[in-house]
Length: 222
Image (tube, rainbow, N blue to C red; front, side, top):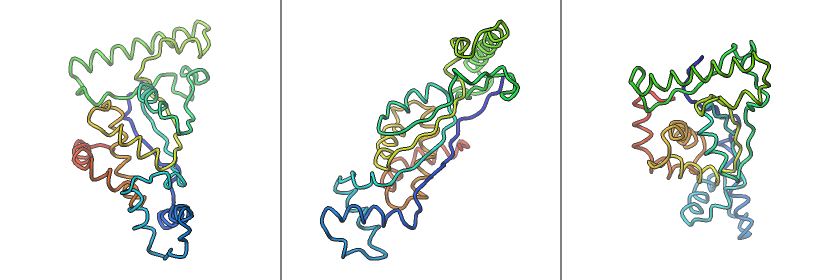
């Protein structure tokens, strides 16, 4: 059994040099004010529409992210319906095969210190689930049948594409203190990265969650 940390990979992101111009060109169609566009006007235009709450304009740009997380986190992600998803399928992924190392991979729970009583109990449960899965496969079960014993902590990969307005909505909810710790584990550093790589659009959210992002980084986050 392998134990890994949750992570993310940005697969597609708007070009920082053109995204503001693209959003501005779309937004100015509403007012027929395209003649006011300049090489530097995009930043203020996008900031102004965000301040006014006219966020539909930023739906004209999107981003794609691959998450490596546990299946409990993906259950929360896919509740955001204004997005497209492609997820690793336990119906077809046969973890008893060599290409998976003939073992399952699980996500380390960040809220229990390794060696703590809770962690030891969790790890034991994961190993028992793995043993049951492999025994079922050896007994002739299909992957889609044996998956019944796989744990919520099972590592999965999910690719998510959403427009920038929806990403703002996702991060506003999933970076909040009331969100599950394991979804915050990936969303806080992702928000930090989005703010760094996409001008203006995520700056206000980055400022809102700045202390949480810094605290996570100090713990040795992604």
